Amino acid sequence: MDREIPRWSVGVDPRADRVDPHGAADERTALAEWLDWHRRTLIAKVVGLDDEQARRRAVPPSDLNLLGLLRHMVEVERGWFRRCFAGLDVSPLYYGSAHPTGDPDGDMHPGESDTVQEALAAWEQEVAFARAAVDAASSFDDLSATRRDRSPEQPNLRWIMVHMIEEYARHNGHADLLRECIDGSVGD
Image 1 (cartoon, one colour):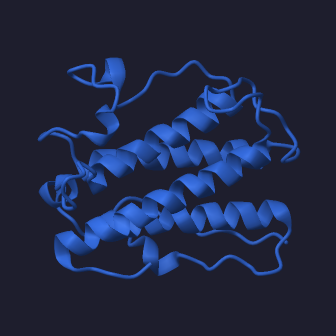
Image 2 (image 1 turned 45 degrees about the vertical axis):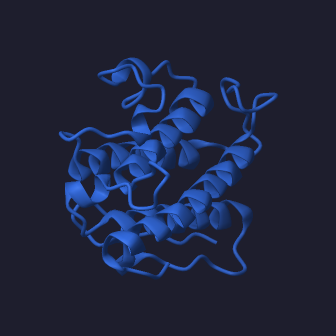
């Protein structure tokens, strides 16, 4: 079942073109549609906030914030699709040596100069790479080029897709609470 999944760019409301996944889709379509649905859900939680609101740690005592979650998902997309699946040697963008203080959780700890616009642009770039990698794969049985610390063996693309859906779904729950505390917005 081939269905074009609408693409969006920074500044476009992702809720406007978020398409509910087909109920009777084949595996490739179902996993791609569910992953894109969850991607759009996270972005919908960030769109409309200014940088200060997006950095706000709105659910004490947690230091979670929406900009941090977005930057974290940039790193998750980058880690699983560029590093693991494609086997590319790319550095982190927001944590460790990429962070001004070397913070190993720097993706979750944005500074005053970090912006939603920059994070959305980086996220879009990683999602575009991920989509291209998935589109180019011959099968969801294709093994990743490398193993990651979290997987006991080289995962196949199917495992990576399911893991990505899980990762977004978990963080979308966090995003729901954060956004409601910031400005009262609710909904999926």
